[in-house]
Length: 523
Image (tube, rainbow, N blue to C red; front, side, top):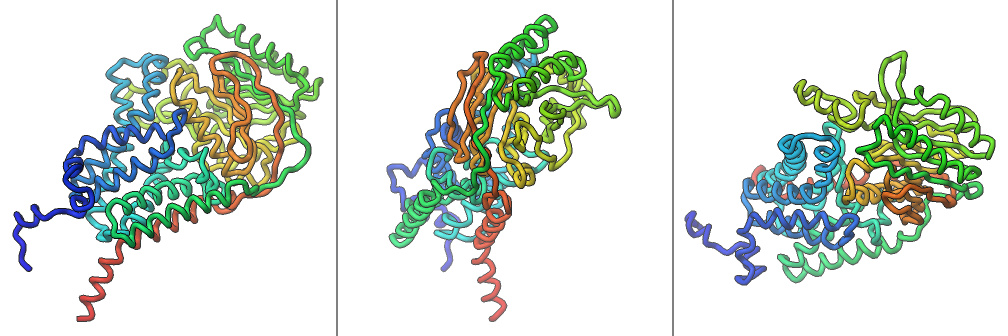
């Protein structure tokens, strides 16, 4: 049958037929991708409107359905740009308000990050429309969900990576969170995108496809329910009393010379009130200076803690005189001093890739007086404190889940020290807490979170927040935690199962092409 280009353009698409004339024009509004993408950010903490994760990605799948490769790239770009504009707006506070960068440079840095993140989705949309021929249920229930998961995984490590706002985090309070100890956050993301694909199939599919899509959704959630209360690790020993010290020192004052003695007195005073707790934790870079500048202070605190039967774990900047480098570090003072150095450093802040000299000069003039940190060693041993093996992370490096798997073989507790004061009263601290909850779920261990101005928290091994301390208030969060040992399935194998499965599902999209080639070769 010969069809002219004009006739082809006038032929109703599958989307037209499914949606009908009342909403048919919606597919032409490419600019709708931006606000819908921004709506995805509401699925994350602190809003936690988790159904939006499914519905917004179902919109993206629909937007790609009848698009050309170029249109798919544009819609994917705008969608993800909206998510990251709304989801990481708090960078403005750290770069401009605290970092004192000019507005134009602040916007440039923020928009550059958004553009990079959005470019990934643009390339994915283009590639799917250009080279993956599968249509119908194979596309909706296999190709698209797998492609999004692979994108998240790749985006999480390529060129240092930025794993923030992975879809799986939106489900920390739903049954789907139960997939985390089985296959990690990306397995939870796969469950979310499967549901989004099923919504697409319910809108566009035939009766049988709709039944299959509904079955996929039901099966996904029922499996999550069945796994929801399963314990993958086991308790060991007695509960441990803990005291998490929150100094709440504003970032704008933190490094001022006149604030130095006040900060020391604050942390010392709060700690003395809770000596006797087995484990006392201070947040990231709690003392405003280098460790060797506080030798007397550290000796005094160690002596007092040891006499009371307490172990003291604190974030502090360390200078190595032999190698002449700085480390963003954690010091554990128990039977003997032990160090942990941050492995995942923040680009353009804690370390400097090749950049113009004027950019480097500005960055080095920000509120953190010590820059050019060196990363710590890979796969460090846990720190021994309070009779426990502590798996440490500093700041946002707890977003890199797979890099913490080796230490879980011996660790009994997780500890994250951070300083989210850089981001002010924004959603950043809530998003970061949500990430910490996911790490506790994946590891099957309790996590202690010490944050300079909040959100300090005690998180259970199933990811629930047991206790928190009010933000922006100095004080101490106290409680008991139960050490655990054993490995969850995710701790044993990491991300590889979900990545392999996703590659296989994506490869299924090539089947029509392979089938045509096979048919042609037989003629």
